[in-house]
Image (tube, rainbow, N blue to C red; front, side, top):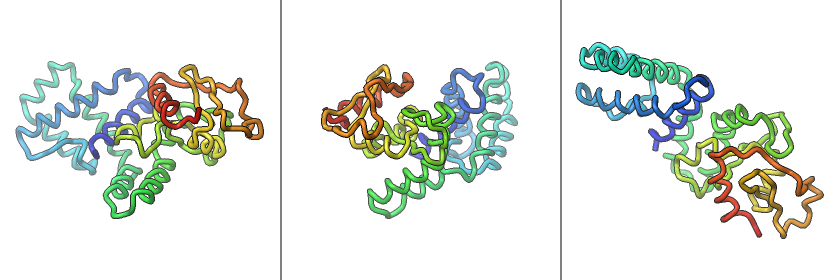
Length: 236
């Protein structure tokens, strides 16, 4: 689980900070290959398990001190050193962010509902919300820009998500609290084109400023999550 979250955050970081990289998955795969290479020489599970940037730097030096891996990097057009450089940069910035807090909450003895609330609150202040801000800026419905008043809302409910989906930015919308509540209760949803769907049970939609003409930008990766919301949350 920790590995999956770290991979997602590394991917998000690449997309946010190195936009010229069109295939971040390639760098994730390269880090996995490097981890497997290192297993031939030292006892290690995965670089994605290591928390300290200083330890990553030690392994960087070790890896490229081995002639076979240095030649492998040369044959691969320096892909291995590039991926390692980026991952080391990411980890240097990454230390102290929300990842460890989330893992601590998951591993705590708190009850399920309390644990979920704490994780959602932490994600709301961390990379999950930040990635949504950088993608869309403001509230998906109103366009309101003050991020302090916006909620990073999960499209597919958090309780129904696997570990990947819980932190996948495609599974998120920035919403003002009133819209977040309506969306969470299944009183509104959106079709594949981003056009709003209003539940027949939502008799006070006009009071909330909900009109049939409302439309949001719905990315390709978000459509599968919205389909789940329509099928399992939205009240027809």
